[in-house]
Length: 267
Image (cartoon, rainbow, N blue to C red):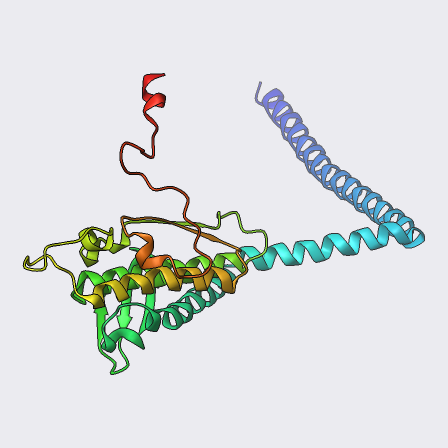
């Protein structure tokens, strides 16, 4: 029995060795097959690329089309580049700031701010103002309503001018301003005669200030040949703006005549 056990053990060892040899051979064959198929795929890709190149080189129209596509891709990459976007944004803000500096001297703003440098903060949509002396203020820190009105007008006029200069801009060229004369005693400016003895009698300088609003808007629209339109809703009568060029009165809503006709409500 011991002899038989030894024989069986030798047979088992022999079978095990054969299995290891077969397994090793199988792995090597798999690796060889993988390499072979990889080479075939690479050769196929090279043949396809050569064929495409031969086709392109033989077709001038197709080569030109490929070149155009390459240029378009390069242009699109520049447009979506964060650095390029930051550069264009900075240029836009500088242009708008320069436009505000050109408009402010024509409006009713304090002398200290007439030559100031204004900057829009796009994060919170606030205006930062730096005077010629180097002092810095936020818009809410500069005092009177007349100053606030002047800076808002200057910014919106400059913004409209910038938008108008852009090619294919989707922003409508319309600026709507509601009652800018309210800062300057609208009762007198609407054409009513106030009692000379009352405190609400406005001074002539208020009339001049309101005329500056209308004249500046008209002049800036004219400068850009009507590329954008300013619509002003105000109580000021034509005694204030009637002698200014390029102003067109549309309607005066008084004595029962209103922006929304009564028959609209009835119907």
